[in-house]
Image (cartoon, rainbow, N blue to C red; front, side, top):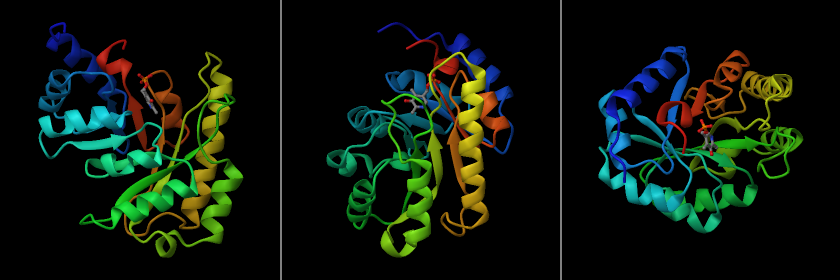
Length: 227
Ligand SMILES: *Cc1c(COP(=O)(O)O)cnc(C)c1O
């Protein structure tokens, strides 16, 4: 493994940090990155890290201080829920009722509630997971999540824009997700007593996402360099 260039990493991190307003949480996406790189950012004050793969999360989390907040941002399979739950501070990509059921069931053995975001499919690509806008609206209107999944707290929404250079397409998708989030938040459809979360924006589109109402951005390459 190559030695970590700590100075370059710190420079990139600070440059990103400077663009993020105080009300927005920066999740440093550390998938495929070494424990050493994560520790370097930790020492610069970063606490929120995002991982995509259950196996990687299980390997890295025990090697880092317990006050790291691990965000599971990948596609979560039901068979992996039990491996991810012990570490996850927030699970971003919940995309089905069956997954909600499994999370609620497995969360029963834990000491506190499990925080999750519902992933909304906003991109034009077929490959991105998530509920449709209608499905999310229906889900949160027809059931009281606090009664149906008492071990979970649905904190808000997560979305990924189409991977394109067309800013107009991305802006349209972020605006739509921002509006959906805003409407549901106004109706108090998210977990009571804790701040709501809209997770949208990555290295290439974080500024645009924040302009469209994001409260949490997931930034990998702009901090760590190309994977
Ligand atoms: C990898 C990943 C990111 C970070 O992407 P960058 O372009 O490296 O910033 C954000 N969100 C999700 C869901 C990811 O899988």
